Image (cartoon, rainbow, N blue to C red; front, side, top):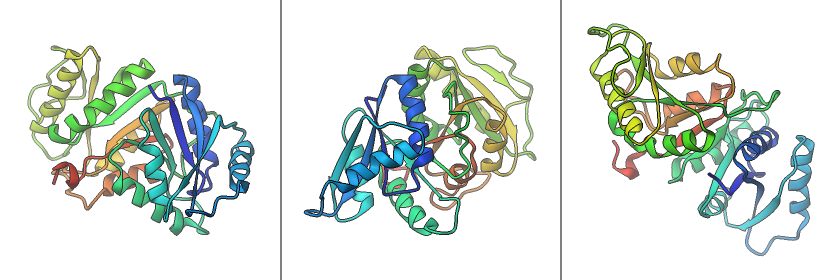
Length: 282
């Protein structure tokens, strides 16, 4: 699934990211690699030892330390994550005031510029006990975005041996038709089906055609972020999969607003899949 799970130590504190990365590596057989970004010509070897010490302070052990020369931290992190077989496990939105703006600025740059999915570890992610990655929960905004998320969803569901839960947020004022029941390729939880929910159902059917079972859950709420968080909170050990940009008719958000709110408040790791304007999604 992933050969290398990268934890940048320049976006910190990286303790929770190391713990999440180690838990995932144990599940999929990957290696935990600490990433250090140095200005060109400035590397002296001391920060490699500091990176290993940061992991040890979190009760973790790194398999390797990679030093990336770059003029800015975000560029170095993105260069490291471009190596095939790598997954970036990134600290986002530091909980304390000190250094929070710096962490936010770097993580936000990475999430805006990446063309690869990033596993975001926000300030509320629970690491005691460690995440089990036993479930995959995906926010289905509309069919266009969902189809961009589908390859990552399929990779994670297959690699973890988990059946995806597709969450479709439905406007509580919308009129819904008869319940679709559980017929067809995918099971359905919830009552009725709007046009948006029908699109999500088609995605579930497409996943089923690829050999991946999926259950569609309809959640009534005006706020997509609140709905996703409320659904995922009681689950044991899920990874939440979300598009980096929203096209929701419930709330046509600014760049990445829903994804930012979910990563900032989720108690579970969040896989942010890039689906921004640079991919032709407005």
